[in-house]
Image (cartoon, rainbow, N blue to C red):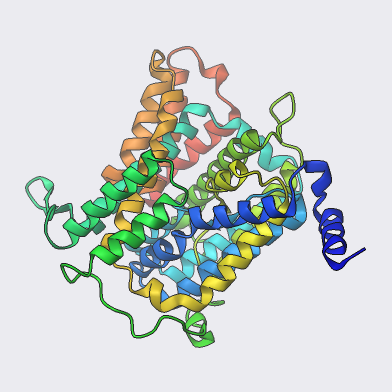
Length: 442
């Protein structure tokens, strides 16, 4: 037996390649594909969290550390080809709604995420987390995911300079074909074309193109270096900087619950969607090893908070690797290794302007709107709560308030139309909690 055969045999025993049909080559290609499709997060996440006062360089390292931990945990615990990273929407909620909107220090927000992760670790080894997900009505799940998409797109419009504050009408048109607006518009069109052509890594290529185009109007600045060793001094500004002392502040109840439910829905939806594509779901639509997958997600979230980044969750971009034939944890191992290599190219990431990442936010928002088609448009008791949830998020600039309003409207509309018995007791409980929040704490 030669070395190559021995290596293949070892990988087969570790990842059960022969049982899942892929070859080592297929798994490597799938891992690289997943990396390409989600590499934009190392540009976008530090950019978003830096708006909350967190140091860009430290968050850059923390983002990659969270990806590596979460993705390796998923590979080891489940042998699924799913990659994890700081969730889009969750990072916007962290920065714009909690830190900026509510004035919560980012250290406290990290403490909340750590608390959430610990709670999820406990819930993931019991049936409770699955029960909670199943108890929430589908219309609210859809309203939440769609509302986050609208919220992210609105942030993208602001970062692009497409809209500006205006007292009389709240917002007005900003730069469209000049300065940052021009760079963002070019990036948006290019990214849209790449998506239409089904080019792998469309978001990443769009960001790169917009960054290069930004040299023309002077929005992008040339970095002083290309390769740079990661600095523990930079990471130390966010590493272990969480503050858990304020987690039990009554004024943060809605924030904690919102983090919990957004992460629950985001993870559950992604796992089911990608698992269906990979052929993992059983005849009843259940995912084998679901508790292990949820545990890996919780480990990523907890570790991410310690590292200094927002909630780590399973990424829908994992579907790109699955489409390339990835079926085992080896895909995740390859993806994690490629993100480790990206640690050494921080100067290139730092040169990317917000105008170049704004199109990614708008495109992600577009993709999150697709779930709206699953709503029952003939049932007003379903439409109204979903609508109030989704529009409240961008209009109130708060994901947590949007979720709270949805949980208040849904049980009341159902109750007074004679459908109260169809509402799970947990939804009633949450509705009462959110009413108390608005009355006494908001």
